[in-house]
Image (cartoon, rainbow, N blue to C red; front, side):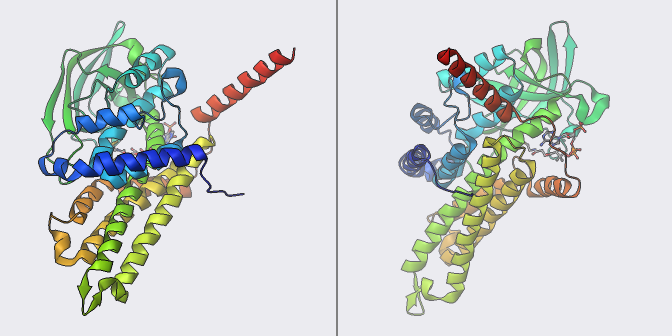
Amino acid sequence: MVDFTLTDEQKDLRELAHNFAEKDMRSVAWEYDKDGGWPEDVIKKAWEVGLMNTHIPEAYGGPGLDYLSGCLIEEEMGWGCSGIGTSLMANGLASAPVTIGGSEETKKKYLGMLCEEPKLASFGLTEPDAGSDVSGMKTRAVKQGDKYVLNGSKCFITNGTYADYFTVFAKTDPEAGHRGISAFVVDADADGVTVDKKEDKMGQRASNTATISFNDVEVPAENLLAEENKGFKLAMMTLDRTRPGVSAMAVGIGRAATEYATDYSKERVQFGVPIAMHQAIQFMIADMATKVEAARLLVWSSAVMLDQGVRNSKVSSMAKRFAADSAMEITVDAVQVYGGYGFIKEYPVEKLMRDAKIMQLYEGTSQIQRLVIAKEVLLPRQAEEPTPEAEAKAKASEESQSEQAAATV
Ligand code: COS
C-alpha cells in the first residue's frame, strides 16, 4: 500500500520549520540577499530550535531523523530563503561522509562537535578544474608515517569561510582515476588551511561560498574516512543521501514562487479583470502547481527509499533533476505573471528566479543527473552490499530482539 500520510511528529516538525522560515528567514531574506551578509543569528537560532544536523544519529548527539523528515524541513527552508537554507543545511552534506565512513572515534568527535555547539562543517569535493568530473581532481594526499600531507585547492565551498572542519577529497593514488581518491576530515585551524576567496554570487547570496587552499596540511591518519582509495564511492553515497534534501529545497522555491504568482494574479487587474481570470495566466499557474506536486513526489520517494534501506541513486538524481529544473521554470514563469514588476527588486519573485538557478548547478548539474539516470536505466547496477541505513536497522532490530530475549529469561 502507498500511504503519503505523515506522522504527527513529521507534521509538527514541518510546522516548526514553516514557522521558522516565515518569522526568522523571510523577515531578513531580502536584506541578506541585498548585501550578501552572513546570517549568523539565523543559523544560531536554527541550531537552537533543532533544525540543523537532523540526520546525525542519536548516538552522537543528533536527533537521528529519517530522510523524509529532513526533506520536510528542507522544503520549508527553501520556501523561506534558499540562500540561508543552503547555509543551514551544509552541515548535512559535510557530515554525511563522516557518518558513513568515519571510525567510531571520528564520529564521536566530529559529529558530536556539530551537536554540542552551533559549529559548521563544509564539504570539499569540487576544484577549479574538477567540477562534474570528480576523478579529475588534483588535490593530493601523501601518507607520511601516521599522517597524510594535503596540498591543493577546493572551490565553491558552502560555508567555507566559517567552517570548523572540512571533509576533503584528495588523490592518494593519482594513476588510479576514481579508484585513487580518499576522503579526510581536516580541521579548519590546521596549519596551511587558508580561505582564499568569498564568491559574489547571482543568487542565494546569504550563503557563504569560498575557495579553500591546503598547503602542506598535516592530517592525522585516523582522520581518513572509509578505506584509502574508496573516497569516490563515499562521495557518490553522500550525494545519494543529500540530493533528496536539496531537491526538497528546490520544491520550496517553486512553491514560494507559485504562491506569490497566484496571489498577485488575483490582485493585478488588466483588461478590466484580475489577470487570474485570463486563461493564459491560469494555464501558467496550473503548470507551476503541477510541477511543485510532481517534484515533491519524486523527492519523497527518493527519501523514503533511503529510509527503507534501498539504494536510491536513480530516483535521487531524478528528484534533483526534476525539482531543480522545475524550480527554474516556475520562477521564470512567476516573473512572467508579475510582468514588468517581476523584473524589479521591490517584488519578491526576481530573487527567487536568481536563487533557483544554482539548484540546477550545485550537488551535480541537471546534465550530471541525467547521466546518472541514463546509466542506471541502461546499465542498472546490481544492489551491492546493504546500505548503511539497512545495516543500522538490522543491528537495532537484533539488539532489541536480544534485549527482549534477556527480559523474557
Ligand atoms: N553509490 C556507490 N557507488 C557508486 C555510486 C553510488 N551512487 N555511483 C558510482 N559508484 C561507484 C561505481 O560502482 C563504480 O565503482 P567501481 O570502481 O567499483 O567500478 C565507481 O563508483 C565509478 O562509477 P561510474 O563509472 O558510474 O562513474 P562515472 O565516472 O561514470 O560517473 C559521475 C561519475 C559523473 C556521475 C560523478 O563523477 C558525478 O556524480 N559527478 C558530479 C559530482 C557532483 O555532483 N559535484 C557537485 C559538487 S558536490 S556540492
